[in-house]
Length: 313
Image 1 (cartoon, rainbow, N blue to C red):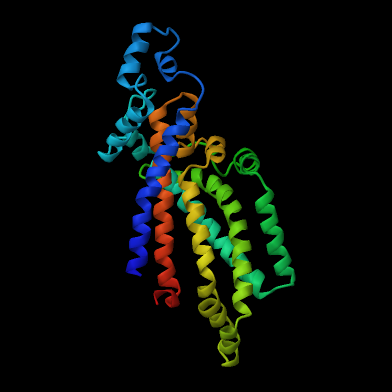
Image 2 (cartoon, one colour):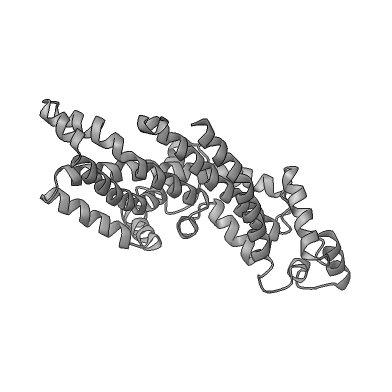
């Protein structure tokens, strides 16, 4: 296990280097002159010249990349030219919102997706199996923004149970926070639950037909013990992988859902930064998201050893 983890850790460094080069390179392909965009409508030549010098826009690309990477190594992701704040500070403000939304969405997705997948596999070719597959098909084919608008019309406009949009910090009012987050969390969790259901069903069907499950049943073990302790534990590996990837995607920001519900998370931050050519914010948020993806994949690999003892050998 230690050798495996050391190899994975050694692979993180070149991966992050490649990601940083890709982020910086693609950022330069955006149309328009960032100095002119930052100078405002007046476009004073003196201001444009000052901005070019401040942000090293006249330097060659390798030099500009070195300035940026040097700052990253020192914990400096640059400053937002639009909001006039350090990017690290902006990430610190938006990250708790995105993490809360991602955790709530994954909780809903895991609860519904894994439960439906188990029921569908155990009760294969029954009405419950067909109902679970219809649910998965509905979740996969329903656009998040459309479902979000329908939920706003029903629960906020017609019934008046929940607020239509906005965000309240849980430290200010926990009840209002949950009321504002439950709809966007369900919209995101619904699509992920459909994917998890399909993968859980497939993995469980394969495990339930294995020899050790038939042996456990032949010993007279309770069916619940056979399904949950013997079958589910061995079927969890692909589910853990998928869950880690989906959680990383949520941390990257659910752009459409955050826009529909006016959630001030990573998605809204990066969309505003792209439209305003706020290069430092775009590079900082994307680099942070890529690092989160890599970290979550590493944690998923570690979880394999805890779930499946055979992998420890």
